Image (cartoon, rainbow, N blue to C red; front, side):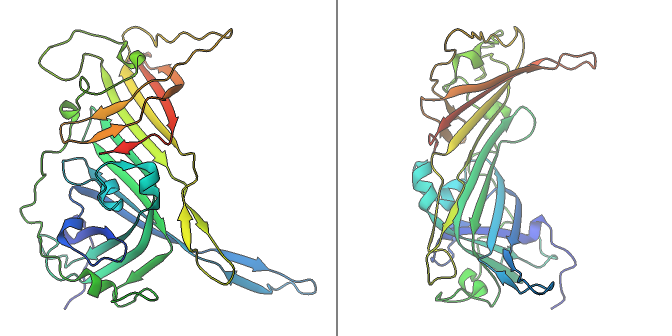
Length: 330
């Protein structure tokens, strides 16, 4: 069989399964836009008095990383798949879940990633390291998830103590992508339910004329972004090379930023004689069924006014909020 001349989007597939479970149809990531992988090898140099040449260059445990981005479309979210499909995925529950990430590479002469792959990469025992969501007036709503671990095997290589190698565990993916379509629809600006969401009062301050028939609330919101970094760290023990577990570095900061078309200034009063902030509830929902619940203890971390210059741009206001440990994705 001739080798591929290249790898492009139609001949790749990514599957996410609970750690140690064989691949099944339900783990295929639908609406995937990009996949990236990296390996970082840790080396510790030891020198000695009496010679210039290195005494020993010691290899420590390697770290691997996988970053996935998909459109939000009603199909299972990456964060949900990596959390073993928990119905409502909280940070503390997601931080302990481990998953196996498979990247399968198919013949570049096929129209879709179906049948037996040429090569399979098995990223074993991966932990969620960071997650972010983005809604904008331009383009599609997206989810991005980064996972970290210590074990990656290609094709016939296998993990110590595991059953089967990468190719054998992946098997033959028979779902087919030839006629694939979103379960609901790819979320665009019109599919973000601003009126049904719970927003800080100041975000709703740039009030325009409500058209009545849409879900914008006439608040002129241009973009919403939500992100959290789990900061997964290895736990080591004497007598063992690799970590026996990873842990999320709580408390975990969850940030949310709203960019709003400015019609009245930023309208945030600031006094040096007393406190300026109150807790704000935030929940973002869209027509695909996705809900991002950030709890009720979000406080403004910054506000910035920019634009409207002689270059012809419009003035916008960015309101940034943060909480700790408050993110439930469902």
